[in-house]
Length: 317
Image (cartoon, rainbow, N blue to C red; front, side, top):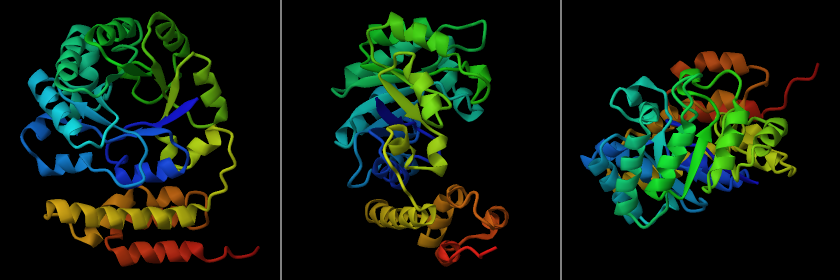
């Protein structure tokens, strides 16, 4: 089974993807990049398309609702030579995405999905894929129409989150519907939704999917992909945190060389590590206190002190 890091806004930047590749991921996706912002040459969005040496296959995920903008963004992504595929997000339920008609709003209109995928497919030579959900809400399941739209548009595959838009990221998965969708299409399907351990991965695999997408579970354990493959993955979380910080600083250097105007090294490290730091230390003594201190951690030196303190031997009892 192939295991893929899901696209997660504010998380799946190049340093974190590289941590996941080292932890056994077979492929990964960028954070969602706005096609409209790329169309209008927004530097902060273009930075989302940056990669680092050592990454495996990376798909570029775009969101938008305008065929011209998505075609342009797809061409731009392809021109970088960094990506293995271009993916259209038709599943993100966050209001900041859906209010412009993008993300999960597209689930309501398979024909719109078809037109967007077709425009992207005609613009590039890379494979174009779709990430979507089962439908707007329970009782209104239209994933079969969405997958059909992807097929007709010439998409190379589809990733399906086995929940409806209204169910967000909680509640039971509808693996029976996912299995039905898999059985009805010739496209390779990647299954997504609450895969956190071997048991949940096996349940997802039973639907017949060709690959399994892991998202939130990787945030605390970038090495979870090796675990899901049944491989021994003895990892020191504190050492992993230190390595992640090193990659973030290296990434800052790469971005500064190319884009110039960036937050300072201190601010960049604090922003990037804020969402990861307490996850690495979860379950250790002092983790709750660290979480409470996160809002006041603003410099590289403060982050390094937290990591150094965590390296100290735990007190004996």
